[in-house]
Image 1 (cartoon, protein in one colour):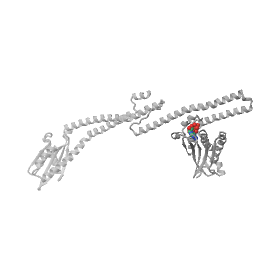
Image 2 (cartoon, protein in one colour; image 1 turned 30 degrees about the vertical axis):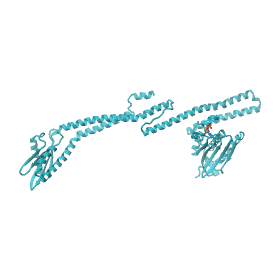
Image 3 (spheres, helix red, strand yellow; image 1 turned 135 degrees about the vertical axis):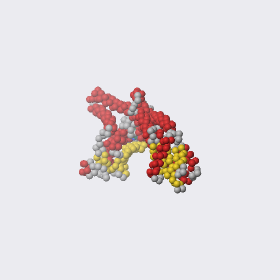
Image 4 (cartoon, protein in one colour; image 1 turned 90 degrees about the vertical axis):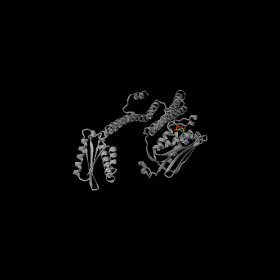
Length: 491
Ligand code: ADP
């Protein structure tokens, strides 16, 4: 927690917040630079072009008006000169007319010179129209000159137009000021937006980090909230699941430590007591001694099994389980398992049935597959019902063979069925019965069957019994030579 606060208090240049903020501000500055650059370097060129188009358009309108409406032309020209801010001069064979819309700005001698210059250009060019640009000493005294011939009733008339090529300085200043204010507002708004956006993005991440820190301190109640974004929601979902799994594993691990210590302690106590008994009492009596030694041997076997299970789980976890693949007769393997159980269990009143299919071959690790069968049968013995009935069955369907181990015992509650394959899991019914076990057997079975790409499962109903099964592909019976070489699957 302390580390988290420390990191927050100073400016972290690598953080999403700073990076987003910085990127936004840089982008805003870039846009403003482009805007100001355009305004500064290209506005004059743009304005000149637009003004030229406009003046040529106005001239064309004036020419048409002069030809078609001689009486109303003067009125029209006065209006046009005023609204367009241009100087218009019309030379007819009899008279010269001037309509001045820029007199306040321009000096008359300049106008006279301009008229002379454009008229000379028009004379030189012949029929049609000409344009010219006159540059003054400042930005505010450039002019566009236009001249054209207009013929009407056999007479040649000349139209000249002078148009200032710049907005007036006040408009220009107002525009500049406006641009400045707009830039300022734009910068502020984009900074605020960037800050808000970066907060919106980082808030869920900060919340997730807080919850993760809590989880790392062992608080499994820490809830991950992904807030508004799909990605963070997905991350939160995954973290909540991870937290749930961690809690579950932690719970099972605690439980297994308790169980394993108990399971280890019982045989160790027995071994010690029987060893002491042999030493003190039965050592000289061969029958009693042998019987006591048998107890010691069976307890050591129990210890061996427990340690072996733990080793297998650890090997499975680190993908270290060694497999010896071969083609073998699964019916024969199942029969071996059945026989070992039948011998063991007949003394305890079990009724074990064996229903094999006709002999068939599979490709796998015989010992491991027998370990799976033994585990199913062992559980059936442990969790069988009062009838002490167990059915070991093999069925064939197409190119598949299935092994079933069925009992009429306690069964598994439906909401716990999916968990029985988890390591250290023992069903709730189990706790009441205090049956010896580690909760590792089925986890090992699952690992082994997965390594064989086998389908497996359990059909069970509470109080009625269970059917644990797995299914393997059949392969053709190997020839004697192939048998030696450990050949592969049926094609
Ligand atoms: P354990 O050593 O506890 O038997 P397993 O991994 O073999 O461990 O089994 C996990 C749990 O699944 C058992 O604790 C038991 O609750 C349940 N289980 C396994 N086989 C059966 C069965 N045939 N009938 C009922 N419950 C079973």
